[in-house]
Structure formats: structure tokens, C-alpha cells
Length: 341
Image (cartoon, rainbow, N blue to C red; front, side, top):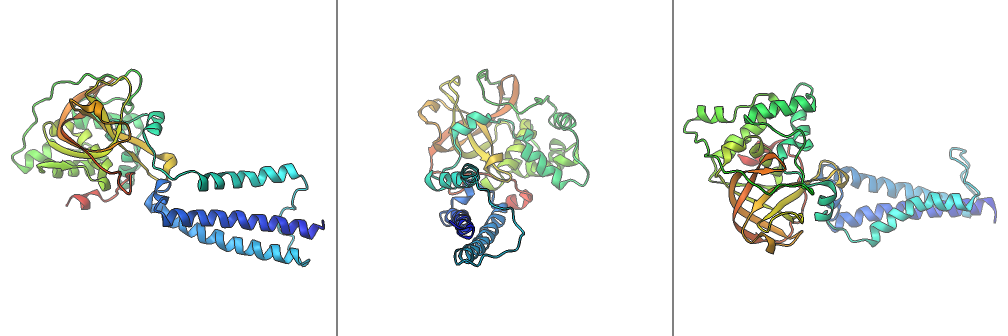
């Protein structure tokens, strides 16, 4: 086979691979499955990439036809093709294999299996997403992780763990007695209750004051992390408050029959950085709800303990089975006050 025909084969194969990736993005977009892999703010770049891949594929196809007709484009601007069949197979296989996996495997959201692998976080105020959000809103540089922990501990008037508590083999199911909530009757008292000792917590302080005035705190998906972070940061102020939360059921074998976690995956950029966050639920018939089942929990906020760390839990009064939402993940919101007002 002539060198031109060999080169034509490579150009055709590259064309198919590029068209495959471009088509895969289009399929994900048409079936609303792109959200399983990419955060909404990043989707526009992926869609633009699919167009660029299509354009490059067309050019590769043109090069293939020119080479096949014996009139290859001789620009001397690319690496010569290897004559080793093994090297070519490995090189193209690295591109074809993920493409085949993408087309053949079903597109599904992350579930309890991934939550178990990563560890369910029960302290939203310590989340990296919450930190990155407040850092972007601040004018100065972010403090170190130890400084942040000390500042948050001062804001809540009680010690915080050095790392977010995660469910594992040594999880504790004991909960502490609920403390009597402080009642604010004036705006001055409210501002004192939700006083932010640093500029990174000012947004959470404002969110907390708005949530405190509500009869029922509805944890909206658009500001999921922001609401949980505010409650976690000022949890003593919310003891006894009614709350509604929707998420998937997550459970460890060592949990008691009246416990499970309602969680969701928080995504900053893509599914690779997805982190599960949730709230421990206390309900008499909790064992009847299976893993990965989507539920809506209504109850009151109470103090709790997990693995020696103070957290807030939900003493559930009602749990309803619900359908998995079209968008199962939650994302950072850099203007959360607009969602509350």
C-alpha cells in the first residue's frame, strides 16, 4: 500500500474519532445528560468544543480525501505517522475506548456507592465549596485552613472539628440533648446572634438572619450549600426551627434503625470534583427507606453528635418519597441573597 493511502487511512480514522466525540456531546445535550458530568456554567465551553471538534473533523476528512486521490496536502507541519501497528493501536485505543464507554454505558447520576467511596460530609460550613465561594466574594486573600477553623469556631462559640465529619466505620449514633434556642425580638439582637467575625462569613450571616425569620426553612437546590453552611455555622440559633430538605438516602451498616442521611452531591466544575454533603436524619421507621431513594424530609433542627463532633441533625416528623429531580446535583451560588429575597 502506498504511503499516500496509508496516510489516507489515518486521516479517515481521525475523522471518525473527532466526529464521535462531537456527536457524543450533542447526544448528551439533547438527552439532558450533560448535567451528569459538567456544571451548568461549564456547559457552554463543552458545547463550543463540540463545534470545534466537528470543524477539525471536516478538515481531517478533506485531508483524507486528498491523500486517497493521490494528492496529499504536503505542509510538513505534523509528526510523521508511526509504522508500528502496535503503537498506532495503543494511540488510537486511548481515544476510542473512552468514546465507546460513553456511548455504551448508561448516563446516570452519582449515587450512594460514590458517596461511600468519598465519605459523606455532615458539616457543610467546613466544605471546600463554601470556602471557595466566600473567598471569591472577599477582597483580600483567603486565610489558611487552620485560621479559617479558628474563625468559624469563634463565630459559633463552640469548637469545630479540624476536618468535616464523615460517615465511616467508627461513626457515633449518639445525639446530645437539644439546647433551648435563643429568641431574637429586635433587629439588634438578631444582628448580634448572627455576628460574623470575619468578612468571609458575612454572606452566611445575612443568609442566617433571613432564614431565622422564616416559619419553615426550605432548603432550595439553587442555594443548597449556602443554606446548610449558614445553619451549620450558626446552628445554635436554629435549634427547634422547622426545615424541609430533599435528597437521596444514604446509610452505613453501623447506623441505628432510626437513622440515615439525606444527601446530595455538590459539584463545582464537573463530576470529578463532586462531593457528597448531607444531614443526619432521626426518624422511627428510617430503616424502611432504601439507599438512593429520593425523599423529602420535614422536621426540626436539633443538636447532635457524630464521631465526637458537634453537628446539627433533623428530627423528622414526616418523610415523603419523591422522584429524582431532573438536576440531581447542587452547585455553588455566588448570589444567594437574590434567591432568598
